[in-house]
Length: 587
Ligand SMILES: *[C@@H]1O[C@H](CO)[C@@H](O)[C@H](O)[C@H]1NC(C)=O
Ligand SMILES: *[C@@H]1O[C@H](CO)[C@@H](O)[C@H](O)[C@H]1NC(C)=O
Ligand SMILES: *[C@@H]1O[C@H](CO)[C@@H](O)[C@H](O)[C@H]1NC(C)=O
Ligand SMILES: *[C@@H]1O[C@H](CO)[C@@H](O)[C@H](O)[C@H]1NC(C)=O
Ligand SMILES: *[C@@H]1O[C@H](CO)[C@@H](O)[C@H](O)[C@H]1NC(C)=O
Ligand SMILES: *[C@@H]1O[C@H](CO)[C@@H](O)[C@H](O)[C@H]1NC(C)=O
Ligand SMILES: *[C@@H]1O[C@H](CO)[C@@H](O)[C@H](O)[C@H]1NC(C)=O
Ligand SMILES: *[C@@H]1O[C@H](CO)[C@@H](O)[C@H](O)[C@H]1NC(C)=O
Ligand SMILES: *[C@@H]1O[C@H](CO)[C@@H](O)[C@H](O)[C@H]1NC(C)=O
Ligand SMILES: *[C@@H]1O[C@H](CO)[C@@H](O)[C@H](O)[C@H]1NC(C)=O
Ligand SMILES: *[C@@H]1O[C@H](CO)[C@@H](O)[C@H](O)[C@H]1NC(C)=O
Image (cartoon, rainbow, N blue to C red; front, side):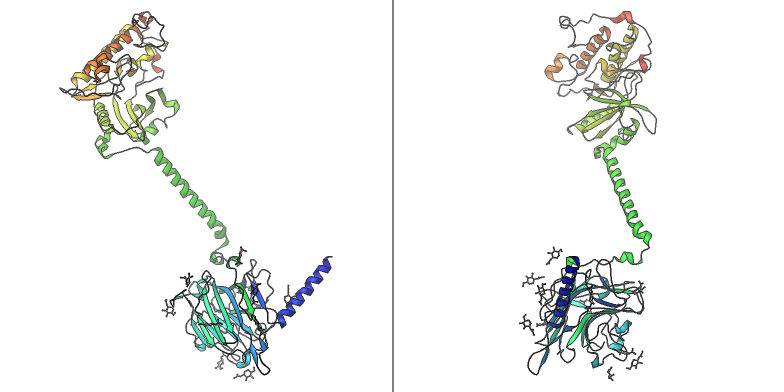
């Protein structure tokens, strides 16, 4: 079976070649030369990906690539006349020099009576002729040169031109490499040695006896106006059968000449090349770059890029993590403003181990300021509205200036998106209510309780009467009183506090505070005054004395209405206890 097929294929091939050789209807297309059967000589070779590489990096050499079969170019147009067929060809080429501005020689599309142009020379002879054969009409050679060297001996116009050569290198017509822009007579110059692929169209009209050459970048459609147009009758020049192909040569500068695709048609227009199917040129990087760079560079690039990306990500994340809100008006509060970053470091990132207490009001964390090593407690409260924030911060800062030994000093604040952080001195003991309610291992003695009550009263007097402004705390209760190392009561949580100038009337505000401590006239008139603070202090006083909450929803019914302030844990008066080390903070 297999031999039969091979024989059939072989026969078909032979028939095909015979047809091609003897019939005018030659029509070949190479979108890349992967499966092309061209006859190569000199240093010409096919690359693995299907490029026709006419010259490799060798000096003073020539390379040829020819369609292997002779092609009939002439026909009997009348009993006495022999004419040349119309033909057309197009190809895509690229010239990649070793140094961007220095070129080798060029590429020639050539019609030649012999395959391989024997006796021709490299360098400026372009692999076409030699000193003796150049210009001799017995050559029967027609070429279209893409010449990149100015050879004054051939009267070249410049070192970047296209020319039509008839039997010699002194071009019959030539023009600087350029193309006409579509729909206009403007032209653009091209650099043949740019290393960029360009396309050439060569057409011969057998009736008009005109030869046109057109050049354009590979991504541009064929310009309507040809670069070269030569009226010439090829019948005395060409032989009956000719070979078609390419010639190229190197001089003293290493240059690679590539043909990417080629199509040729006799008596008709050559098939368009499919540009997307053409093989890719070797990147110029691979030509000179050491191997370690080819492998190393992308790795290094990837590494650099990923380092940049990740550090950017880190910076952005860090920036977002430590983002805080800072407005112009806050600049005057500089010393009272804490950087979120510092608070974050102080509290070890607000971890649960640092948590002192939590509740509906927010969370309180213990921390140590990074530079001053001061122990602090940070209360995080959410603030959604920006409304009144300015006034609030102003008051916070004012409160920060309060100094009293029965006061938890407010050190400052920090604002973040949707969050306010209040920074207080750290109080080593818990809040008072823990000692009263939370089934403590130790309970405060009466003298301790009395000391606490006196302390809070003294503080309240300071706030109401002694300071430059009137400070109404608005939330006096046992859980807002903290015990210091000596079990002194210290009033804390100034989050609801309001400031008034002495002699002014307090403004009506939202009613804030804690149920059970709210004075009846406060809920009625909506005004927080020194008197409403005193009412709350009264409730607090009873709370400390009795060990009962003002409003105890869990208390047995019947005792709730009467207040039940009668239970005094005097019997449990173990004076100074070791409860201080326990954590349980509220501010
Ligand atoms: C290529 O063409 C030549 C000349 O016609 C021929 O001898 C050779 O067998 C062909 N090679 C292939 C692989 O077709
Ligand atoms: C170029 O090609 C020729 C012939 O194929 C070969 O001998 C020479 O080593 C090649 N030169 C380079 C630099 O590859
Ligand atoms: C020049 O080329 C011709 C063919 O074109 C050849 O016959 C001749 O021998 C060559 N002369 C030299 C000196 O190589
Ligand atoms: C080339 O031929 C010309 C005459 O045709 C001669 O003057 C010249 O010296 C020759 N050059 C070389 C390199 O042979
Ligand atoms: C042209 O070449 C032919 C054969 O190669 C030779 O006989 C003839 O003298 C040459 N003509 C000139 C002008 O060199
Ligand atoms: C040129 O003109 C034709 C029609 O006259 C139009 O289809 C085409 O888009 C034009 N090309 C450019 C580049 O303007
Ligand atoms: C194109 O190149 C030619 C010759 O190299 C030069 O004379 C001409 O000014 C150039 N034209 C443009 C538009 O660059
Ligand atoms: C060559 O170009 C001219 C215009 O410059 C055009 O009239 C002619 O038809 C073209 N000939 C061929 C064979 O393309
Ligand atoms: C060229 O091709 C045309 C059809 O495209 C045909 O009519 C004509 O006979 C052909 N010319 C020759 C000389 O074969
Ligand atoms: C060449 O062949 C292609 C299809 O393979 C066809 O489209 C084109 O018209 C042909 N050209 C000639 C001149 O026969
Ligand atoms: C060119 O080749 C691509 C890929 O092979 C194909 O998809 C496309 O249809 C071709 N274009 C033409 C005009 O033949």
